[in-house]
Length: 165
Image (cartoon, rainbow, N blue to C red):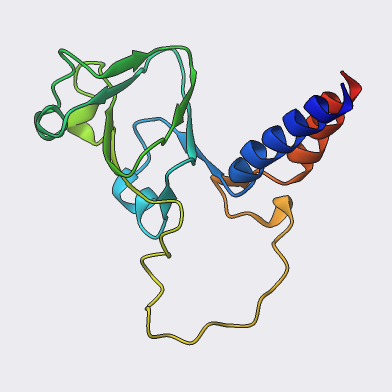
């Protein structure tokens, strides 16, 4: 019985370890944020998440590229109006989100997210640039505003739960 439990624990830790490098981006979903500026300088990788926080006077609608360009919320990919919407950026490619409330998208309440592969370097880093010495990862409290980092502590906690079974 100990061997299957150990195999499950290793599998769970490997899966969670992949998430340990994922980043959650907090999106204050409102009419006053400039989302073009908000996205600027951020790198969104497969496995990262967006957490949209908003009031009941808004919603989050994922749409196609053409619907994004015209602010058309009809026939969405998905729609949420919970006030706290979590979106997993599962695969590389462009994702488009708008507020479906009349007039909100046309006044700028829309965001285009370009998701790169999890192993892609940051677009701001030149491939020819020398690699700086490895530094220890920043503490969660030092993450830039709107961004939190999941840590390997989750993997350890999950492994403890599996071994307790």
